[in-house]
Image (tube, rainbow, N blue to C red; front, side, top):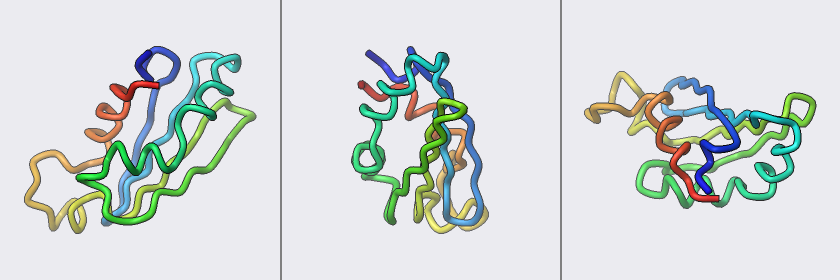
Length: 99
């Protein structure tokens, strides 16, 4: 199953840090989301992009997880030569993760 089947995402970026939130479509899917998407799996999924630590924060009241990815934007949005290193691009990419 693809992650996009049970969750949607919101993102943000600041400097060289990207922030990806995963929000389960239903509260019933939150446990699946929590068990399937760990900080280690997100770090491995973005191994070519994320150079720093990935920290996961759990928000059970709204059925969401928030991942803060340090060193994810090639030095920062304004310093990177990459075409799409903003958080929104990473949000679309994580939706394709197999869980």
